[in-house]
Length: 216
Image (cartoon, rainbow, N blue to C red; front, side, top):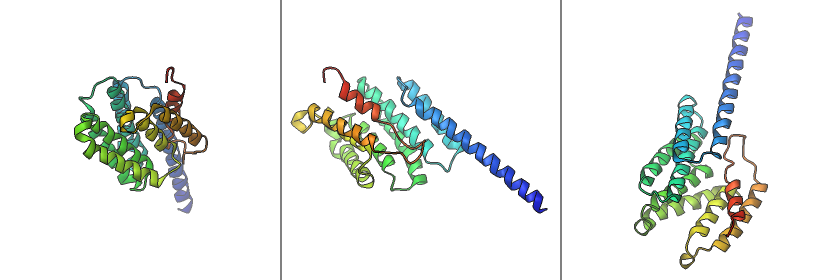
């Protein structure tokens, strides 16, 4: 009987290990695609993929986190193309995934608070003049929480640099200052190590893009 139980336990452990390996492989493949998607439709497909992974791996916070990230990247791409009409819906979808991620990871996760900031910023861009005191304030609040939790996080530095870069000078922004902040962001990436191979590690390429952008 003891031999049977031992064999069963070893078999269960092997299956668990294989399942974990499959999860990590699939997640790594999908995370890599967040760097190569070029259209809103591709980001939506990626969101759906992460959502399906999360439905199977219901105890893990990273699938809903990356589903939210994919939605936000979809919204940022649409915003850059001048399409503001869908940003409310996209931010709402991102917030839904972030709520799931936070339920699993806890309230003290800087990466989740940073995405909440980015989602609120998307909402604000639908009508900045009307929403600055609501969604703008929410974005600032979430950024402050993220920075307090993880002040050395390079993604926080990246989004702060973007905010300065794209804010008109009359409102305190500056492209020159933004570029200098992007350079500091890259230095932070040099010294920052994610907690695991699947943990958030995006942003360096974007900072380098702004630094090397022609005619900056």
